[in-house]
Length: 251
Image (cartoon, rainbow, N blue to C red):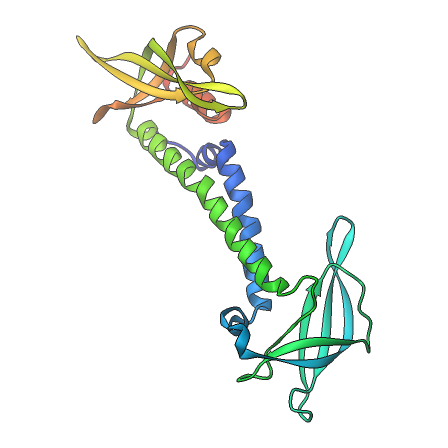
């Protein structure tokens, strides 16, 4: 069965797990790209003994477009002289408009690379590093949702492309210890014919027990090369299920 690109996309985005993973992944990627640009890797890898303190002066305060609890995020730029002669510059981010141009603050710089420094204030210390690591965490969370969703979608798509239609009869429904939206997930076992005097059993887990067992039979597609692999059409995202039904089960 030919599956057009629109249906392929709907097959992916029709799953809640894929949408959640996609959103987490996009947000995490934005965090990683933005804060990796802002982040100096030598700061992240340095030990606390590699730093030396120094006074600095705020040279500029810029309000960004980002907010948290209606508090804007500011980017502060500062100037310092680690050797008393050569001026170096740095910046930090903080959800506060506390600091003003000309205000004195304390920073710490890398002894081996005086041009690399960070703000040593108690609020939002090492903000770039924290947000970068948060972005990594969001990416990993996104992957946790995306990988099984994509893997399941690819398996189903292969079956749909090469599969044959059949009607499965529900022969057993066994509750599991899992719940989705406070609904018990069931292991549902179906039996369907794959040829004259040939039958095959197939099990699927779902919390949509009312939908799947309402008529005790379900339209499905099975892989003729591996008859034990099948897809129940009603478990597919709505637009995909309607497309497959229209192609394989025309009225």
